[in-house]
Length: 265
Image (cartoon, rainbow, N blue to C red; front, side, top):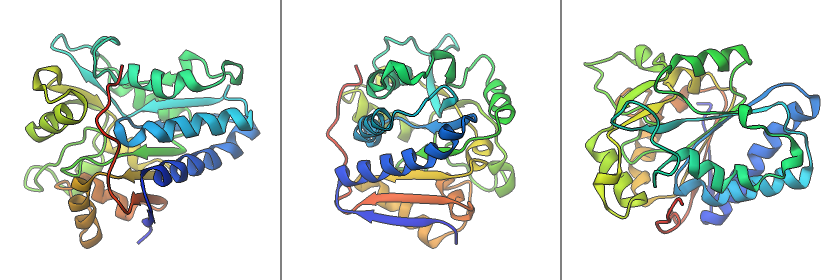
């Protein structure tokens, strides 16, 4: 098994360890001046990590002129487009507030180096990742049902193990459990604020990343993590595919308690 498990004491330690690992992974490529592709995730799990990562990159002073970021997902409105950036759950707004705005402008990360999958052309982001050489590191959280990004669980009777791993970036209907969870964690319990669809990076580009780092800190994540320990890759637990990835790490907290609910705006 290539999957490495790292237990830390608390949320702050998880955030510090994750940020240090990402910065160290990016540094060789940035120093060499080659394109470096970083896959990013959102949610309460990542709030302090992004602050610490920005601080680390600012302190190192490395040029980010060759860094490309690829977010896992964004919500899709009823019109089939990204929700507007002023939507209370917009992941583009989350990333700007919690990470991009914290980076020193002189480091050279330009807006055209920041990528989100587009519901109007989901395949375009997969093509761009391939043209640039693939993701160097993909940061992940894990849903309470074991989803990664918005790749929701599917029964093996619906889709084979290999076919699920090959899923591309696409627009996805969110499950009731995901809507309920995201309403509780990010929308003050108001289900009406949570869109019913999202555009999500597919399993294929995620699993092709050279390195995967998953962070976990919610008590409800203990169940899917436990199933990963005992099981095999299956569409019924999307995160289980990390078990067979050649370079994947899970950093999880001993207290398994994330930050309290926070507004993203």
